Every structure is written in structure tokens, then in C-alpha cells.
Length: 129
Image (cartoon, one colour):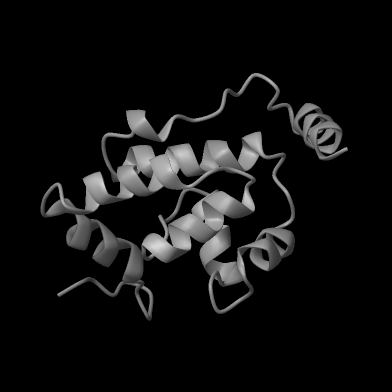
């Protein structure tokens, strides 16, 4: 039943051409973001609240975080969020956790990338100091 719903949803969204994203091929943070977007679409792009409930609720995966992940604006804030998101998309998390570890421990791009996502100007024209 679930497989039929997912396939119908993917056909409706025009994403039948997508293949399951392989986390072992993820090389950087942008690649992880893209793979998570593809995983979401491959799972039929279920409503964010449904993903949130399957992930354990708003304390584990806030809707705002989910929206940023599925829109390619952010990656999960930590490994627990990654695991919750992946499992909520009906996928085993082991390979995704290995990809996470590989990226987190690969070099200095992680804090720089996260800080860029976290910072937002508070007024028009404000620049980062």
C-alpha cells in the first residue's frame, strides 16, 4: 500500500525519474544537501508534519529545520537529526551516518558552512562583521 502511494505521489510530482540517492557517493556538504532532497522526493515528498511525527516529534526535527532540509537550504544540525530524517523517509540510516561522519571529520568547511546558513541580516543592508 505504501509503495503504491509513494509511486503515485512521485508520478504526481514528476519525480519518477529519480533514483534512490546513494549516500556513499556524497563528497561534500552540498552533495549531502542534494542527496537529502532527492531522498525526500524519492520517498514521495510526504507532508513535513508526517515526517516530523515519524522522526519523533518537533523536539527531534522542527518543521523549520525540515523545510530548510527539503528545500536545499540546510543540512541537519547534527547526526541525530540526520538519522531521524532518513528513517522518516523509510530508509536505513547506516550508510547516511557514515557519510555524515566522513563529512564532519573531513575538514574546516563544516563550521564555515553552518555559520553561513545560521546568519541572517536583521535589517536591510546589514553586512556580516
